Length: 238
Image 1 (cartoon, rainbow, N blue to C red):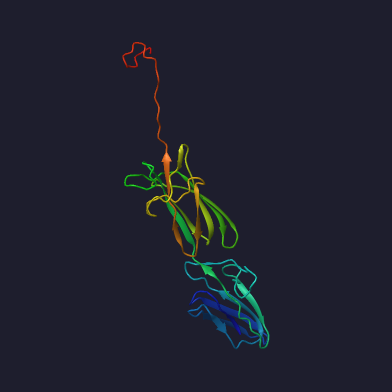
Image 2: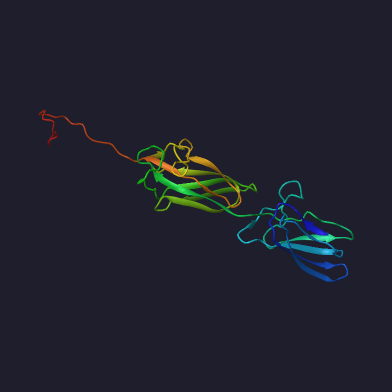
């Protein structure tokens, strides 16, 4: 018996090929049931290779994570096989593959003209602002990505592996982050003005929105002068 069970996709194609001890070759394909379980019995002792198909839009997860072999994913990479040797009466029921759908994080960086922390009608997106995504994916790998906002202030990080990340908005010179969480989530700023960042968790197939409002950039100035003739007008020579 060669099989697998767990929290996997249904209708995945799994191909088993091998060389039996009687020198006969074997090649067959099965699909997982609605619970992600698959099984092949009646096999003759021999050496077999198990290959998992990858469902459209998904990515094979990291292999051999954790200490329980019944809960991890076994294929090392897409297209690779899991090799199994079966003896008479033996059973191997922990051959599995995990998949995820890449996630995304995006949003808009905008200019908060009145500084109230809410994006009002007419407050424009801010172009050419650096936005960073850092953190660790679910397999423990460090992640560091940097993009700049477009002409309308929008940005996006696509094809993300599930994990725990931090989004940082790098405020341009003479700009700061506006007050956060001041209104409805679709019109307020999500960025902490102290750290210029906010955490975000990406799960399989998730799409998260992180917006950031900017204040500042206005200028005040003038000149003080000596009004020699006391007429209240800054005249030539004064």
